[in-house]
Amino acid sequence: MRIASLFALALTTALGAGCGGESRAVDAGGDADTDVDTDTDADTDGDTDTGSGTESDTGSETDTGTGSDTDTSCAEAEELCGGVCVDLTDDVNNCGVCGNACGGGGSCVAGVCNCGAEACRPGEVCADGACECAPGTIDCVVACANIADDEGNCGGCGNECPEGGLCDAGRCVCPPGLINCGDTCVDTTGDEANCGGCGDFCPGECVSGVCECGVLEECELAAWRGGGTVCTDTDLDANNCGDCNIVCQADQYCSSGGCICRDGWENCGGGGWADCRNTNRDPANCGGCNDACPAGQYCWDGGCVAACPEPSELCDIGWGRDYCANQNTDVENCGGCGTFCQVDDVCIAGECTDYIPAFGCDACPCDICADGTSCCSFPGDDAFAVCVESDACS
Image 1 (cartoon, rainbow, N blue to C red):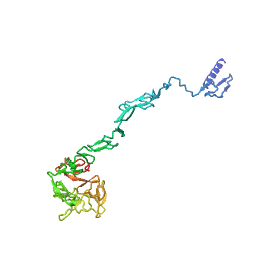
Image 2 (image 1 turned 120 degrees about the vertical axis):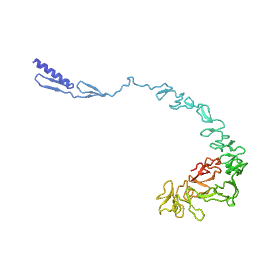
Image 3 (image 1 turned 30 degrees about the horizontal axis):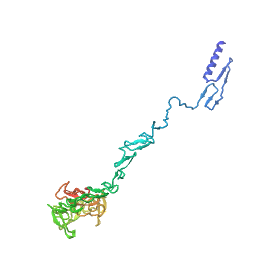
Image 4 (image 1 turned 90 degrees about the vertical axis):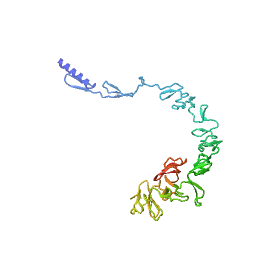
């Protein structure tokens, strides 16, 4: 009986421990009484009482006093900028407010940036801590300028004097002996590009404002051409080709004293008369005289095509001919369909542009080409150098 009683006591203890605190009594007769306390007591601090003798505190309180807190307080005269306490009244990197840096070697005084020697623009001075235009100058955005004598701002901001000119009391003037020709001060007594006057080109030598032909031929111009004289090489001048006043057609140029069809053109005339046709583009003479394309086709690079390829456009130049034209270079359709350039023109970037032969020079560069012109090979003839009134050759 003693052994049975001890066994019952041990079983009771084990069951009590395994059931999380339930009070469980077992008597000697084998009856088992179970008492479960299901009362729940929840208070306002988050504690839960399950009646089992175990108390759980689920409160969400956080204690920041564990030594991990950051002290962000600064002295009374300082401000926190980027995690560092600074005095905004004299800090050159945070002057007045955080991040306001005083550049150019300036200083911070009472929270205001004062200029430094490197902070001011050209023409400015540093006065009382601020950059300002020097006396006698005005603010021209990029710099302070004295408009009385500044060639780049003469009489007003942005008013630039001609090359070689001077600013005198706010007015642009050329030095004595020079005149203003196209924003450049030049000596018209010896400038071949402006011989005797602005724009009077002299292919020979300009002596005391008079063009002397030298090795070139002097041609008396006919009345229908305005009269006067010109210095020229009749071997190369399309306006005086082979002799004075013999003018080539617009689709020709002068070579060795004769008018010949331009590159890509062929003389399809007969009986000794010239009829230059563009056999690269003309659908009635595509690839050769009288070689016509079928109806509805066009001509490009001497071959018949179903559509005009880029960069050409379809133009109707008359006589029922639809023509593929590159309006950037085509002297018949320069800048637009049907715009035909003059005999002494080439088509550059869609504009009819004057040229003269580079007399005495067969290949660029040529000294005879004056400022404002480009030395170029004549289209289709690398042995013919010309001076073109353009900043480019194509």
